[in-house]
Image 1 (cartoon, rainbow, N blue to C red):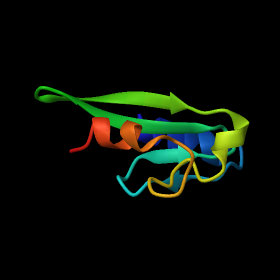
Image 2 (image 1 turned 90 degrees about the vertical axis):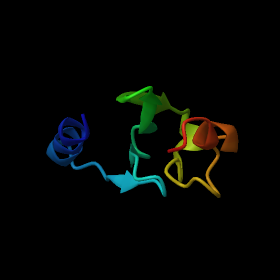
Image 3 (image 1 turned 45 degrees about the vertical axis):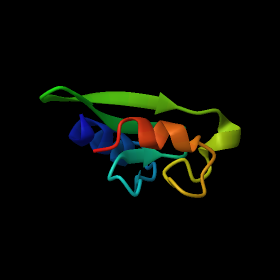
Image 4 (image 1 turned 60 degrees about the horizontal axis):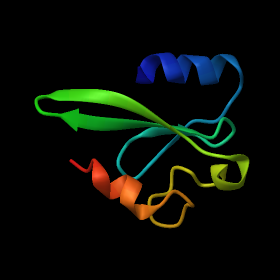
Length: 75
């Protein structure tokens, strides 16, 4: 999923950022692709944020996404 996301952003001249947990993010789209463990599986789970939260949506310490979101599916 990360490769497709990266290709999509590059084709549209959008910036790609990574969170401190290595989740790919686009502040311009307000989208973070989170990895979520489900037993032995790793699933992709998109987190979409409003424009007001999009700035620094990749920042797990100073961004607007609640800390609980980052801690819930920690490795």
